[in-house]
Length: 225
Ligand code: CA
Image 1: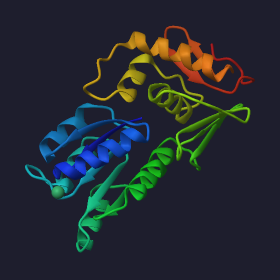
Image 2: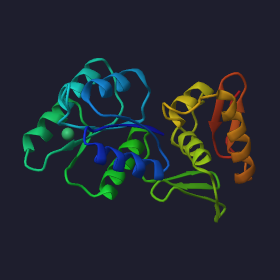
Image 3: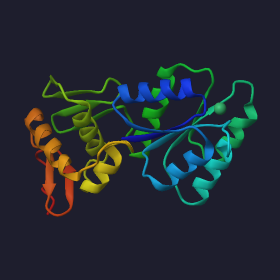
Image 4: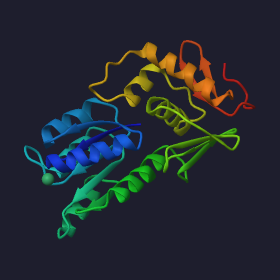
């Protein structure tokens, strides 16, 4: 899952990015509304954390422009404590949820998890695929009851495929959703990660769909052509 953080307070921006990276997400950042709007308009994010008070273009305008142009990614807005009207304007502009400053990082992470899983159509924070359980709260993966240790890239890959279970995901889509902007993107590395992940999981839940990409499905599910 790849996220965008738009926050002009540099310390807060850094804290958010590092907490999100620790939680297993690929994260891009912007420090003003114009830069944030541009990134959200051109890159396929799975979710955005958007501050309302931003230089160059305020958060409400950024959000309105995205929604007007058909950008549907989940957006969590950050609002000032005493400005209830910001929340109302934010929801009207297309926000999916809000957190009031100052906030606890755990709350931001929990609200974000909820947004991401709802966007992908899941009701709980634990995803399962056959014998594989993935807990998006703890970033832990368990196969047949035993914990499997994954690197952050392997975890992101598995989490993305499991969020979109039953649908073919192309290599390009994976590259776009697993790596941040600054990462040296090479779609061949996806193949390497898939290989390692299959080995570590030890069960066949990731099928290769020739010429199209990959699909996560329980081992006993009918194979896709
Ligand atoms: Ca601000």
